[in-house]
Amino acid sequence: MYLSKTPSIIYKFYNSKDMWRVETEDKDIFLTFDDGPIPQVTPWVLNLLDSYNAKATFFCVGDNIRKNYDIYCDLLLRGHTVGNHTFNHLNGWKSNTREYVLNVKKAGNYINSPLFRPPYGKISVAEHKFLKKHYKLVYWTVISGDFDKTITPEKCLENALSATEKGSIVVFHDSLKAEKNLVYALPAFLEHFSKQGYRFKAIPMHQKEIKHPLQ
Ligand SMILES: [Zn+2]
Image (cartoon, rainbow, N blue to C red):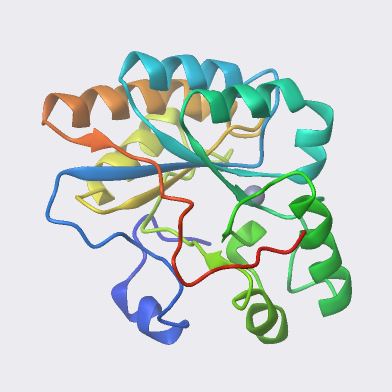
């Protein structure tokens, strides 16, 4: 169960240093893509983003970078930013802290970034306490639900359009599971907000307070 738009009470419940949205008066949207890079979807996303002069942030799975290093380099060269999403897409609630942290560290050998997003948004108190010393934890304002096979592509688009506003961090996935909804929703999403004068920006990797990503 998930909500398209994260209620603001959640921001207060979690550590306030975590990022749930970007405070801005500009018409900026922060697209994020989780779980890649993979050859079947990521290059398509990159070409589409280029056609809108859009930048985004990719929360990569370390093992996918190991397998598809050329695509990873390509997305960096095109000016997007990246974040750590563990090496094996671990669920923090089902992993012990040591295993989880070592998996993040292993991904850090491939991903040089101070940004981290826990897979499924699930992370234990102990894991969170440790990782926040090394990373800026980035969650989201809007979940498109592209990964959800029980919703139609039209519903996925509606979720994303209705919940997004300036400063929103929006989650899509460059994954096989999300492909069907993504290929429908992402072009329409970009078109809709571009026409309204919004710009798509990457979350900066220069986070002042974070000096030592795990590597
Ligand atoms: Zn994920």
